[in-house]
Length: 557
Image (cartoon, rainbow, N blue to C red; front, side):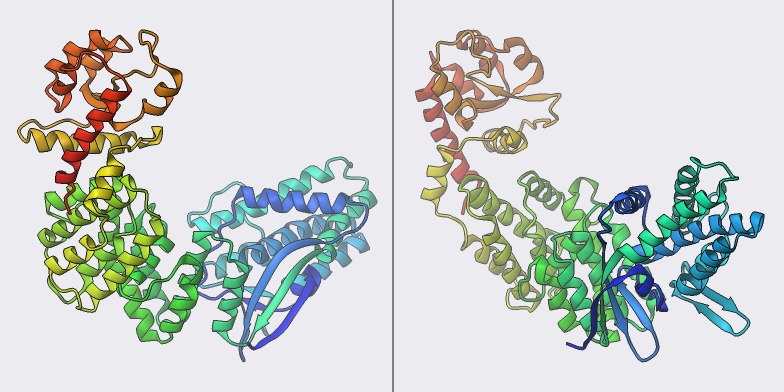
């Protein structure tokens, strides 16, 4: 690796060089939380009597033959200049009013050592931002002063303005302990902030001569499992390979806009796994960077990501779907969301992107098979979830490459991974729901009702249909052993769907007082419970076996 510099530098050394922020980097984003952390660290370090340094983070720089480009650390670098400029203006104020030589020396040092100048001979500013923010930063921070009260229209410009105002007010408050006439004390206080920041704030500075290696360093240092950082890393790398940054930015923004609240990293990984070998978040950047190494491959990837984003959003939020026009497909997607299933996403993406012309009705058949697979293997039988991730990624790749080119072949592949009927029935017969799985209980019981009575549709809204515990949560009218109550309360055999008015009328009453409500309920198989004389452990076990036999037919292999 062409790592030509790796050192611990204080801010005086770091900011003494000239840096550029590449156009593909995101705009300035620090808000009050980050600014508050900066200030708290500064105050704590300043008041620390042992003069220990403060680690301010890492800086990763790509140094080519033309300039130094900040790959990681642009936010703290921009903030540092904003802070120094706010500090400098207090020195200037003292100098202009008193002609104090110390104040003049400090304000001049900040300009020459940290900010730089823009003269008729050329731009000699030490930090040059990307095209989106360059002019504002130069005119209102480095060479001027932003308006303290008037908001800026562009978000990144407003954040810079607010950062300046934040530091200005903090310094103003700190200086308020001295009167305007106490010049030496005011300068000494300003000096304590200046010296603390410039000499005791330190960064780990790393400089690489090759861009891809700078990104690898960035990835390694930021491997903390934070998805947003991974997405930003991928974005920056893809943009760096593009010849048209503006077009790449439009494609990326279009994709993110469609995804809305969905994490871009999760989408990109599912997309990648729909047509390549399986990869996890931690290796996603390395995998993509090996493949995307030309402007054309960068353009093709962004085009495909943008094109597939609507399908991904439709899978994640089927209730908002305007993409898929098949009611059966939308129904299965809603069920899969209830089952908290996401690992299948690459399969649907592959069916939409392959050369085989799969229609929505074809995808609906596959989605229904996936729904059965997820319910049998994971919800009921408790298989390890990462098994499905690898399986669906491999299946998606075969679909995308044309090896699985018919609906029957895809469904057969999925069915081949389903647990056996015996395992499913045995597990279903003893399945106990967690309190957090109420929607899954509602899903299972409604499916059983529809299997028995296809003519009566249930409104699944919780205000209309409740989950009834036959042996109730508060069994004050029941003679039941506490251990039996704890073990069997959430067994599926003890649960039923019941209309709200009926459920509220019987509440926690005795079984005898509840039976008539079960008898008149239109939801099946509630009427069978009314035929029992008593209700306890044996009846719950027996009823759940009946439900298991229904389940074997409904979620059939």
